[in-house]
Image (cartoon, each protein chain N blue to C red):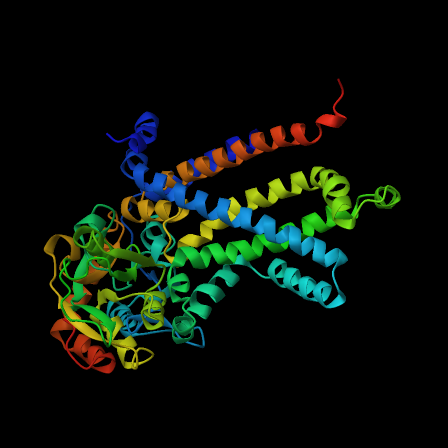
Length: 258
Length: 238
């Protein structure tokens, strides 16, 4: 019984810790950045278990600009906001779109990428992706993303499959279990140029829905960390103005992403 | 308000109320997965246990290998091997007309859980049969009973009493292990909970999910108590 009470107490404390982080003005010398590490070419753990990708290079560059020491923490996508709120790291840089729903939990920095959303499919599939045309088809994407919300809102008559990572969804499209994937163009393009070269193609552009998709991807911070947000806003604006954003963009992408 | 929103309403939990219907359909998926796989697994296990004990040498070796593999590797690993591994041979499955089966995550999970639980249950039944004293076999033989009759009328009724509790444990373990089905896009109870959490960021939904699993296990515990009373009624003190 005592053990059970302790368990409940621990659960309640965890819940409390996740929602109420003490607000304090502090000078940031070290910043811990949380990322997913499974979303190439934004952030990805390579075969040597090192992080690489546009966001990794970009955030490291911003850290130099801000003259702070940055360390990276890899966290599964599903828990990425709760872990921020539980103070496992200070900012999320993980291709996260600044949506209204997430703004209830966290604050977003300035937007640093804004990429088209694509539908991809097997080579033989059609390019009409209206909900009526995809009735009864299997559409996949990563769970807990804006794309999942988008599918659930507009594609009620299709079978929606949500995967822990985008890579697993891509694999299932290649395997033929999925008819379509709707997700961010950049991570999809990587797949279409690589493993998905023989099986799959881009089917169509997906129109952005203002309320679901938001203005673009940005860093997410705890609402209490006002100074941190200001620091990043300033650094992001500077990097866009002085061309350092473009330099890193050109290293990773063939076309502009902002 | 639909019926599945009431529990959340009664608990005063907004998130549990909002996602109550998803959790209810998730509970049904979990129920289907576990009941079907454990039931088919039990039938398979009976055959496997008997063949393991009395079959030809090659059958013994094959079944030994089967149980060693499925008891010795993580269920998640097996599920991924079936779902993503076997799923890669689409052309082959289409040729043999089985793609409809391997296309569906539900069937993949069902297949994995069935072969996994069959391995565990076979070992449970084998142990139970082996622990019946030799004298019982000899007595049956002296009465001139056929081997199958011996097994069916003398050995199994006694062995099932011994196997009952471990089989109940296996059922409980399967209920909890079935949560990994959510990793292959199935919205079982755990999948529905993860979705609710991803939307609401409200950790308490996991607490409610835990309570539902607890409730399931408690129901099974009570059913098993009844089953035991029934199977041992000839031994009960009156």
